[in-house]
Amino acid sequence: MNGGYFDSIALTLYFVLSVLVPISLYSAGLLFGERKPSKEKNMSFECGQVPVGKAHLRVTVHYYPYALIYGTFTAFAILMLISAPGLANLELETMKFGFIGLPFIMTLVLAMVLIAASLALKRARLWGS
Amino acid sequence: MIELSFAEIVELILKVLIFPGVAFPLLFAVIVIWFERKFLARIMLRIGPLHVGPFNRTGLLQPIADFIKLIQKEIIVPENAYKFLYNLAPILAALVASLSVAFIPYAPKPDGGYWVIFYTPLSLLVILAIFTARPFIMVGAGWASNSKYCTIGALRAALQLLAYEVPIVLSLASIVIMSRSFDLSRIIESQSSIWFIVLQPIGFIVILISMMAELSRRPFDIPVAEQELVFGWPTEYTGTQFALVMVSEYYDLCAVASLITLFFLGGWMGPAIPFIPPMLSGIIWFLLKMAIVTVVIIMGRGIYPRLRIDQLLDAGWTVLIPLATIQILITLVTAQWWLPLVGGG
Image (tube, rainbow over all chains, first blue to last red):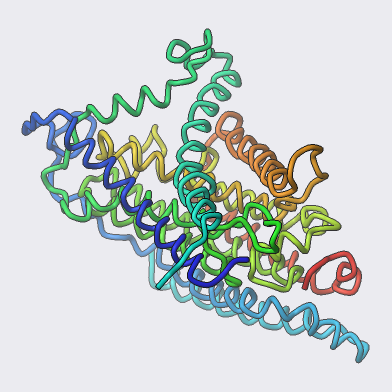
């Protein structure tokens, strides 16, 4: 049977090994690899041109709406996932009273999410571009 | 004091070291890298790897030769990079990618347990949590490299992976509604009479597409697009660090193929193979289905052109999320018809 300290030992061993494998690969590279650093080699790669300035670009405001929609839809998705195990039985319970309750409620929640997302998008368009 | 019997020690070593432990994802990576090169070559009317290895014109040992070459290469850290994070990211990527295998059950054991490294009734949530950690590593690596291509690649990776997490969670919700459990082994057992691919065809398509996007494989390889970004967020990595990034990609492929098999293709379910114990035949069925899923995922790289980033994001938000929601609605409305078909619960 599963469970108890047996599984914990297995997971701990597996974790330690999966830390050790990449570290040993990395150190093998350090150990057996060449080491002749030069200025050209250590430049960051820009197809042969000498890199100028910092590479840390600012994130443009165009991406902001996506963050907003992500927030709203993730809330909906997590709500669905966490309540999922009981939903089928709940649906059968409501069926006894002769109406399809859960899909109706779900569509309602979804409508709210869509309204929230579209409001956020409108707001962001005013803001951006 | 912890005491283990001899059989338990053997099981522990088998699980942790061989299957599904350390050796299995590594072997999977080596075999799939070889197969992918050969398969893509045939699609493009080339021959592919040829000379290395025992049999004539197969190039069987090409991945191992490549790996030995990569060990001999210099590990270059660009002069502007944040050295600690830059060196840590490939190790973390490989670690996180290999962790998810520990929670996937591959076969039922004769004593009523499952062939899995760590059993938990919430394994689906654990796997989702592990998957959520990946964008942070990509963004961290791209940011720490302090190179323009890496930064743009990291940004694209973050956008793409976030956009496609929502449809994955939504389609998983409709699977959990059917199996009524977050336990991965329970999800397989509830498919004992009928596989979920028959009951949830829309969910299967959504998961297949979004998982391919999560892996950033060909039609969706925008974060690592060679023609635009050299190699995207891992551009600056060389030698074994590059090998680690590649291996972590194939670890992820291994986990994703296992998960799709488990969610939709009935996992270890299959007719008993004569003269083979049921646990072993379960593992064989699991690996066979996994191989088919892997081939389908790899085939995308040979036959589809790459999408643009705006096409990809629009498809995610306006097609896949509504489809996944429709699947949940259908699942709920038809509850009284599928409930007798689904075992477990």
